[in-house]
Structures are given as C-alpha cells and as structure tokens.
Image 1 (cartoon, rainbow, N blue to C red):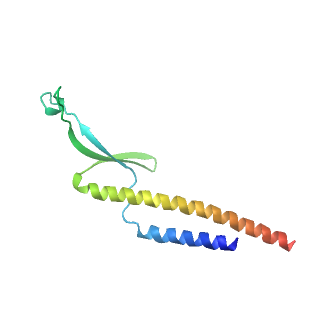
Image 2 (image 1 turned 90 degrees about the horizontal axis):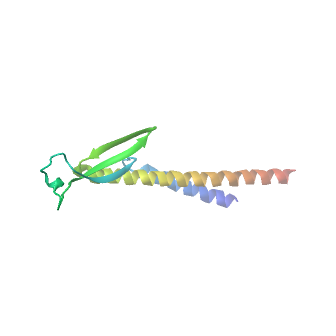
Image 3 (image 1 turned 135 degrees about the vertical axis):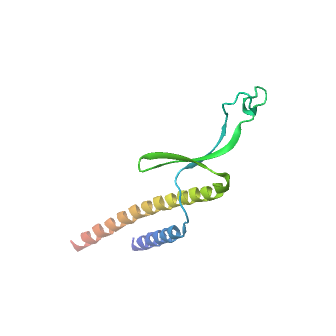
Length: 120
C-alpha cells in the first residue's frame, strides 16, 4: 500500500509540474458564424445564390455565474485557440489530480485503519 501511495504522489507531482508550464488560459468555446444583413439588395439576400457575410468568430464562456461572449478578430484567432486548448488541458490535469488525491486519501485511511488494528 505504501508503494501505491508513493506512485500516486509521483503522479500528482508530474501534474503539478505540467500545470506550471501551461501558458495563457481562456475558458469557453469558439464558434464560427455567418451573417445576413438588412440590405435587401445585398448578395446575402440573393434568392438563388445567397452569400452570407463572414465568417465571424465568437467566444462564449461563463465565469462566476455570468455568461459572456465577444467577437474575435481573425488575427487573434490562433492565440484564442491556444488559450482555449491550454484551459482545457488545465481542467483535465486538475480533474486527474482530484481523482488521484481521492485515491491517495482512501489508501492513507486504509493504511491507518490497518495500523490501528495491528496495535490492538
């Protein structure tokens, strides 16, 4: 059981080390949108071959109970996608850390119980 504890502790340390290296973060999701304008003679209103305006990119997220969204300029798109990927990776690592911490706690409790039984 002590070997398992040590193994879990090493896994947790690896997670911590990786978290330190994660760059800029941004929660949310990115969507690509096309638009139809209000000009009746615009190409987007062509009944046979409509050509919508766009693409426009929008990021949407919820933080501290508030929903937000913002348009993203095409020149910022790569940065935003990287930030979203970093945030996703951070959440994966945090969830893995929590799972390992729970397993670690269980093992530690069992180790303490077994030790107490032997002393009785």
